[in-house]
Every structure is written in C-alpha cells, then in structure tokens.
Image 1: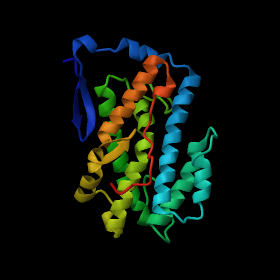
Image 2: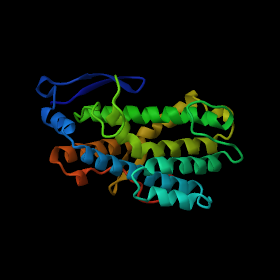
Image 3: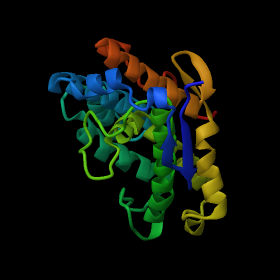
Amino acid sequence: MGVALVMCQAFKPVSLVLPANRSTDTVLTRAQVSLKNTDRDRYWYKTVDAKTRNQLSLASHLAADHEKLPLLAATAQGVKPHKESLTVRTYWTILGDALFPGEDFKRLRKGKGATDANAILNYGYAVLLSTTLQKLFGVGIDPTFGIAHATREHSTPLAYDLMEPFRPLVDWMVAKWVKENPSPQDWGITKKSRAWVTSLATREIEYNGTSMQLQAAVESSIRSFRNAVLAGKIGTYQPWIQRDSKWDG
C-alpha cells in the first residue's frame, strides 16, 4: 500500500521501514532543501505567530485579571520579528503566578519546590515531540531539514519547529494536573502523571473548524506544511491556532 512502518521505543520513533518505491521522496526533499531563507523565515514567523496566540489564549483563560496580560497580548499579537522571545518571559510569569501563587516559578529543566513541575512539563513536550516525529515520518517528510531550529548531529529540527504551536496544550494539561493535585510531591514523573500527560495525544481539539484528536491535528498541520512546500505556496500551511477560549475539553 506504499505506507511507512514506524517502530517506536518509549513513544519515540527508533526505526523506519519504507517501501522500496518510496524510500526517498526526491521531489519533497529537493523542495525542502531549496527553500529560500526568506521563505523559511515566513514559515517560521507563521508558526511562531500561532504559538504566541495560543499562549495568550491559555494565559487569558488561567489568569484573566493578571496585570501583565495586556503586555502579553501586545507582544503575542504584534509583528516584531523576535515576538517569541518577547512573549515567553511574560507568558511564564503569568502561568507561574496562576499555578504557584507566592512562589518564584522559573521555566527551567531542573529546580526545587514549585519548579518541580518542570519535570512533568518536559515529559509532556517529549510526548508531543514523539507524536510530531511519528506524523512527519508517516507522511514522508525528512525531519532533519528544519526552518528555524539548529541542525545538529542526530537532531530532527523540523519536528521541534512544527510542534511549537501545540506546546500550550502541554502547558494546559500540566496546569490541570497541578490544580487537581496541589501537593508538590505529585508534580514529578510518576505512573499517574505520566498516564495523564501521555493522554494528550488523544485529547479532542478543534483544527480548522473540525473536532479531532490532537494527534490527527498534528498530522493535518504537517500535511498542510508538506503541501505548501511542494506547491511553493506558504499560505497553504495552517499551523494550529486555538480559535476560542474553550480549554476545558
């Protein structure tokens, strides 16, 4: 049937078997490699714009009266080229205040106290990355040719690029977990917290007016990127954007 077989370990693709008649998608690979820097920038800006708007939506939902929300809105909806870095600090300040009142939460890989929630956030991003990689392989896109993230040995920058708009969904899952499990002892990586975050892939969200599981939305977004690159029409690329304030699904 011309499909790819992806074998995974701990949710991460470790091997890929392709039919001989599609071992290399030459046309797509050539289109990826031949992208002009200006086009890469436009793809990345569209991706970042979706991410920052989703961050604004979630922050507004969790802390509608926060004093820094207007600042977040100005940067998230702005047009400055470095809007991602301008948005992220304010975003995590708002989420930290909403989830850990009185604590000095920092978005770090390691920490103590309230920052132990970083472990479950990182786990959630790993699940999202694995889902994105599976879908990239499944539709025949080489993840080693990114649009923004740096290319390093054994890296898959395109997966990190295209997963960005979905990161706030991980933040939302962790926010719900923290609110329902207020003890810091429950914020690390446990059997229960892993099961909760891993269910992210099957959560229902709305993508372009259609309700579907997150994993299907990731694939749809990736397919739109593939079609855009092949056709040379950036407008065809449709990253996920939370169109309303319904984060309780």
